[in-house]
Image 1: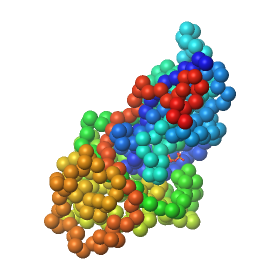
Image 2: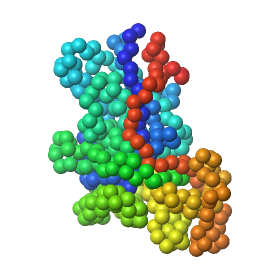
Image 3: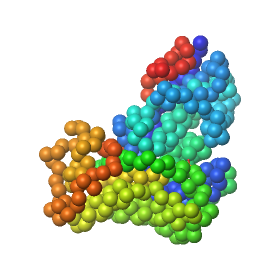
Image 4: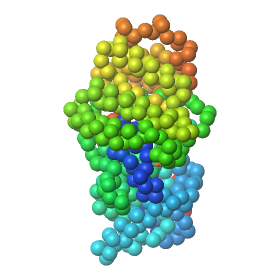
Length: 393
Ligand code: DP6
């Protein structure tokens, strides 16, 4: 069978200024600007082959060998937008094959365990859109593609870029100005590291989509956040990134995580994403910063209890030195990422006053990573060119 295919990757991004609230649910238009750091794809990425053929019968998605329907309104919209762009390309260049209406087989592999409980939809949509854009030979303006990713999942639009990324909320009703833009690439500030503490939690979180709807409808504090807090913080955080001012960046990041979780608590009924383990991690970071006499680490939490801790390479010995005291039993401390001999505990860190048994509870894995690049095209082929199904089934 004749199969057209192309492959690309998509990274995870973790917001430092949170997107929380939609002004248009269908177009996924946000109530505020947001900012994120894209993480290194050698640790966290989705690899996707997009393939199409006149013989395929339906649009289908496989993630790590399991099939998922592509029939949600959001996926339908994303594929519709991509097909429309392909039609324009075909009209402009008559020599190109007419593949816009062929059904798609999208085959994805994540390099991180699904059990890690990390939201992978941003990496997934970024990889899917980048792979289809390559397959369809679309003009690769990443901000344009980010508008399509946004319709899949809001935060996914920021994964179309590497480094430090803003999502400009825009003000048009049709959403055409609500897109991701680059603040600075990875190379501008390559020393940014991230430690992800995956917090084990049995309880099902309130999904972001419904959580943010509830906040918009019921929280009074939310109005203050979007009108007063975020606009100022957005400018300050961009400036801190451009100036590579870590203490400022870190303070704004932690304050914004706190602000986001406050509007969740102010929703009615309240939404709790942080659990006791998350709160102990916040305390450890605060004690570390006090012991250092300056802000050397920042925590941030999304719609769940997992902690992401940002720090600069030069302080790794103190940040990982402290975390290793409590979490050395976890998977993720590879020799390549961490050298126990270089670890240091700041003299003012009150290690002997903290109950080690209590503080080391509740975390199931650590992922040590750093700022990374945006989607890349690769030569991998995940589709079996005889059957049109995943090779690794
Ligand atoms: C807390 O992008 O998952 O992670 O647009 O409904 O798909 P939908 O929501 P989603 O929300 C992410 C919320 C957040 C903050 C952020 O990433 O900015």
